[in-house]
Amino acid sequence: MSALSILTCRPGDPAFYRFLQVPGNVYPDLKERMPLLHAPDLKNVHVAWVAMQGGQPVGRLAFYLNPALKYQDGPAACIGSYECVDNPEVALMLLNDASQLAKDAGCKWLIGPMDRSTWNGYRFSTDHSHPNFTMEPYHHLYYNDQFLANGFEVIGEYVSNLSEDLTVNLEAHEQARAQYLQAGARIRHMDMSRLTEELGRVADLCLEAFSGNFLYTPITREAFVQKYLAVKNLIDPEWVWLVEDEQGMLQALYFAVKDHLDPLNQTIIVKTVARRKGSPFKGIIRFLTSELKLQMQMTGHSRMVHAFMYSDNTSADISGDFAGKPYKRYALYARSLKG
Image (tube, rainbow, N blue to C red):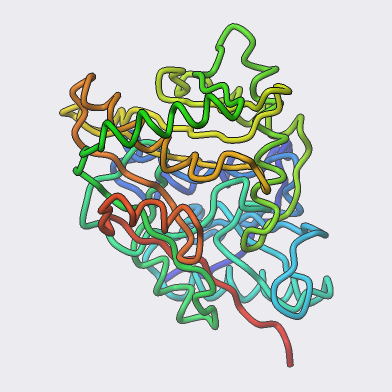
């Protein structure tokens, strides 16, 4: 077997095409899987590594230094866009070299997979018992084994819950609507004619609402807006609810999308729910979930997936209230660099 070597590059370098070639050697059904892979945060990649063997790229990772990223007792680096053939020697070289670089940079932990922050792609799937859904990345399951075999441990577990229960207590729901309206709530869908402005307000809400989340680091309002403008083709205002108070301040967001990977067109994906801290509209997310169910009844959708919930997250409790059951699971890893 030919020797392994590491090619170092960065976005914009002539050799960076090798980084982009790796998925073609890892996934035989590349055309199908490519849209589901994690994309690097090109503006913030510290360095990208490509494992080469016999003149072919057989593994890769992007290394990030995010000054705001902390875990437990110290600073953390992270690695994302990880792809690798099923070869423990390739994984060992990539992950050990990344760990050494993180240690040399003064970090106490190396977290992965994560493309710089939780605003970007992170987590590995831990089972393939069900097909992928829209906005869910795909990974080989053996990536989990490669991380565990090289000193990483699970630091975060996530779940996507599936519910087929569209039952709504209409009397209680309309009573709640009347109470919210009386309290000054304005409940509406996203206005696509002024999408940039709408996304800016959503950014302000999410940056506050998620500030206490596990491994949260801030991004700029502009970066948030650009991230969602890049996927505006997935935004259907019919499935996005905004709740404002009498002063026009955004108090809650409920962002769902159709599952374009469902051949039967029966599934709605609940991607993001957020409520402003101290919002006067208690229970508004539960109310919006009922709004979603009623709309699904009218449009013929029968399945909803509450996606990517951290095990301690409030949204997991919300999904549980509506008879959701675990559908897909994911894990995030870290390696201690102490000692």
